[in-house]
Image (cartoon, rainbow, N blue to C red; front, top):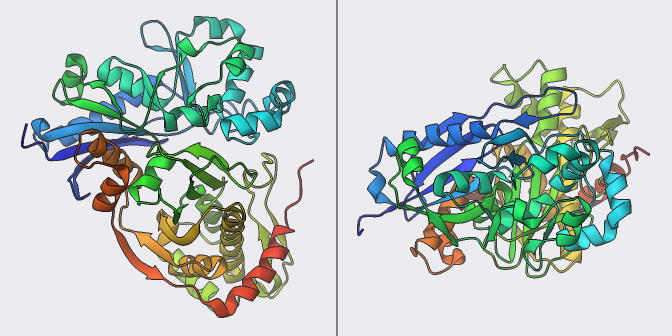
Length: 491
């Protein structure tokens, strides 16, 4: 049809599904949202029902098809919460609750499995350092504790593969939705058969694999009746929400650092080669070309919010952040001797210590809420800066930062990051970056643009830039040494 001027990006995240209709220039024309419930039946466990993934997708998508003519939709792609795994029976229904990426039941499997398979080889093959987040450890836990359940499972799926199956009848994982599982060979783009054999699994139990932008299939008649989409509408591969967000802000190219100042902080950069380091996890690129390295702070803005809720009266006060920012802005770099280690919920890079915890060092009677708030932001900032330094040391270009997430609204924090890294920081205008990244994938698949680069340039947009102050670089470097030393290993 000549009037197909819209693509849909479906972003199925941890808490909700957002379906957004995008124009050729990346304008959000309309959207729908629906929550995804999560249960925590015991300490350290986080579960969802795969039917809730589907139901929320239907609700969010019907909200969009109720606002625009479905005949206008040229293609659809899915961005998904990563490291969350569902288990299906032969009829495609959940055979047991899905394990969300927040689930910690497999913590003991890290030492066991890395001993059996070799931590260095696991890291090199999958790009993932030993950590509680990759799905391989939860599959190992199932294999040791509930082997009878594994025998009943017909399909083991990420959210992308599950939703593509419901939408089209073809269960397909993209490179970027499969590789966070930790059983995916990031260079050869296939499941690692030897790891699956070790877990008493087979590749047939997992989704087919597709490159980003590849055609999966088309909307089935059943899915059309539940979503309001037209049967026959093409569905293209997109994938993991972190990589999609990098694509959505046009950071999948040399020299640009993607910074998501959200609940967790992600510091990402494109690499031509599959660079391996403890300062990041190595992911496949959302464009299919090269790789995307990600430094991750598990408790990013979550640490700041915890501090505000616990010690500053809570976020119910609409002016609490303005007050704290005003106080912290009057305090010099270094918070007058107060240093914080921000590992409230464990540490990913560079220590990969899930049992690490936060600490406050140098606290004295002269320190106020403003000092504590500033020290918290400084700690998170320096973790970002050291990750970028490591990237540069490994030959990864880092010339400028594009920031998204709620934390990017803080002028103080944004200036701190620019000064500490020595890089100009630009706030992206693409607020729903993951959904836009999915939309860009659909636009490439539909033939709107000949490449991901051209699509990302056309569909993303940026705001003002904050330039670094070189006169304070030495102060930040000195503080970085002291703040890095605040980490106390858990063992």
